[in-house]
Image (cartoon, rainbow, N blue to C red):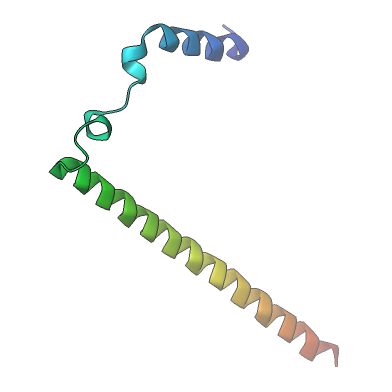
Length: 77
């Protein structure tokens, strides 16, 4: 079967079974439950780690760029 027909067919089948489209019990449960609080802290922690890593990569790229510009300026003289 062609890929063009597989994806719409899969989406159509999923639309006919709405129970599979609902979120987990943690998302739709009590927001003050310990499981929901733990999930919230896990999300915040993962966002912090991801932001820190991306910030470090950006800083490294900017530092290399700055040093390359300075090196090229010194070698032109």
